[in-house]
Length: 74
Image (cartoon, rainbow, N blue to C red; front, top):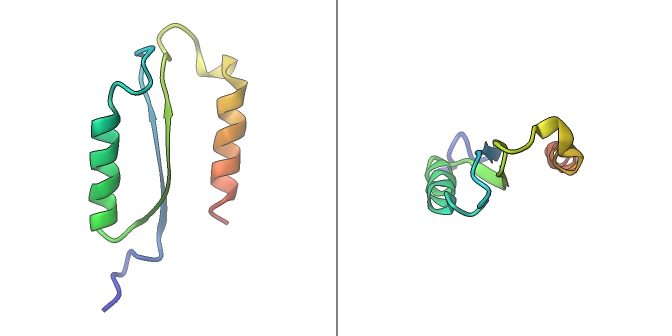
């Protein structure tokens, strides 16, 4: 029997203030596995770190990447 969520694609996006973007990787991996267990197709996990020292509006690359990730869902 196919899970009802199996056809639902999911993108996980995280942000945090620490300069080390990998600091919370174990949490991000856990969250991804949890949603996969629930039957979601996790298509991407995107993390933006170091948001304390700069604003996201100054991180133009992140805006471009997030648009590309979103476009991949349609």
